[in-house]
Amino acid sequence: GAIRQRSEFTLMAKRIGKDLSNTFAKLEKLTILAKRKSLFDDKAVEIEELTYIIKQDINSLNKQIAQLQEFVKAKGSLTGRHVQTHSNTVVVSLQSKLASMSNDFKSVLEVRTENLKQQKSRREQFSRPPVATTPFPANNLVGSSMLQDERRYSGDVAIDMDNRTSQQLQLINEKDSYIQNRADTMQNIESTIVELGSIFQQLAHMVKEQEETIQRIDANVEDTQLNVEGAHMEILKYFQSVSSNRWLMVKIFLILIVFFIIFVVFFA
Image (cartoon, rainbow, N blue to C red; front, side, top):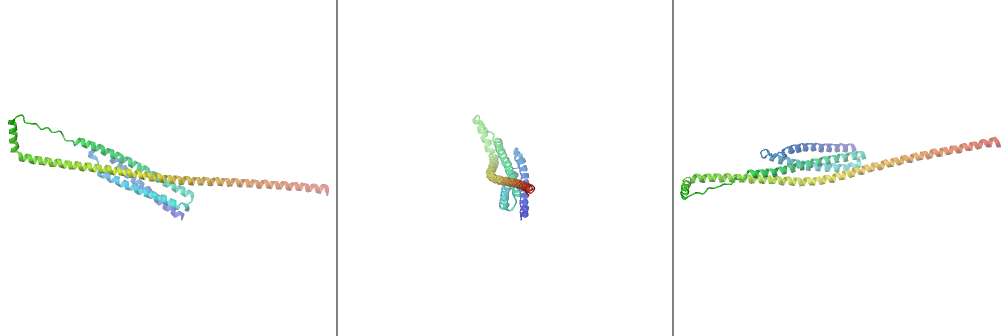
């Protein structure tokens, strides 16, 4: 019956409210991590995991609220107007909280994107190699001496050059990997922001529908009140007319009695 449906609605709304609170706690943690600007204190993996989890939570909450709205529409005819108005108000409240949290999430992602750009700029400045200068020999004697030294230590130099080349290649690969990871992260953030935009549109549409429903119910309630007041006025008019008719009948009756007394006294 109506009581069971009311209980089911309450359980659904409470579950959504609890999920909203849990997601908001995750968002607060992400906000703290995302605002850090240091290269050496950037917990990229944790930030990416939280971002993914929060995005999934918001999508899930959006679906749950849509289901709750459909539940209210389907069962609205079986409940009273006051109950339906209250249910619609609860749905709008949950939608507004989700929209607000989604907006905060979008702002955090924008801050994260800006910090990644700044980190990339600073890393590029630090990783620029110094300009190397190679002195040329002043005469053939010096050149000959250097040639002999080069031949003498050619093996050691070759090994040293190989080590340096290997280290440089490793650094280049690490840098390329870091840049690629950051590029992927920024791309994921941008796609998440786009998804949030679609969620905003859905929420705006849902809120508009709920507000129209509430306004329609309020208008019906106002019409009902006006009809009740009108009926009350008609009843008062009826009683007044009945009362006036009774008084008229009393007057006629009194006049008849007077005429009867006069007739009996003077003409009998």
